Length: 234
Image (cartoon, rainbow, N blue to C red; front, top):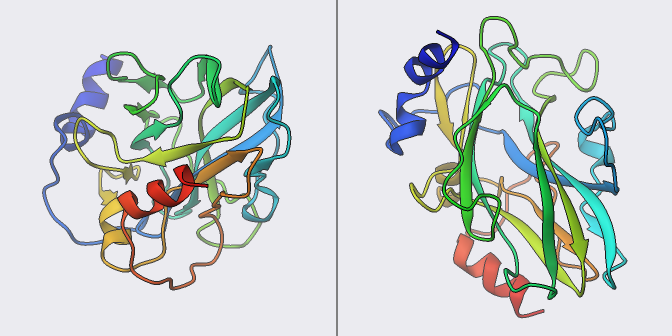
């Protein structure tokens, strides 16, 4: 029964189509990565209390150094909450070059990963039960739009400088956040419409990183392809 509820709530996420383009309450949400010292047990329950100002998107060591990289929704609505996200990741997929993902831990309730997740240039859909586990607690008390919804965590080894980038889910082209009423925001579409970039970049051993959490600031219009080229060329 639980699985049926989720399929009913997220038909557009699962099919990779969107019913409308109007913004819901999570139109300013981002999907970001926080780098922490490596954790091997109870990864979700012992996760740091992340806020927009404490996101660590840069790690200096990239010579066989190990980390735990938490991926999460930020800037989430405290009124309608967060109940799901659709996204992908990309990094250097060659073994022992750049970042290698050694393990993945789900922190949501259900997951619908694509084949070979979490390999480079793959994607997934993660959901929470909107009735019993709606993610709607502000990470900063009494500050709206500060919900942090922890999606999962990668255990990674950085063999040489590299970046791990949140991207639209390759199979659908969408990066979306759903609230607990079933409404969705395509946050990649928001960025393409000249809103601030909303997909994070974690950097290992170089300076190309990006934290989309916190108050929005208008930026020059850009594209995901341009960002990817900039990161990979440095």
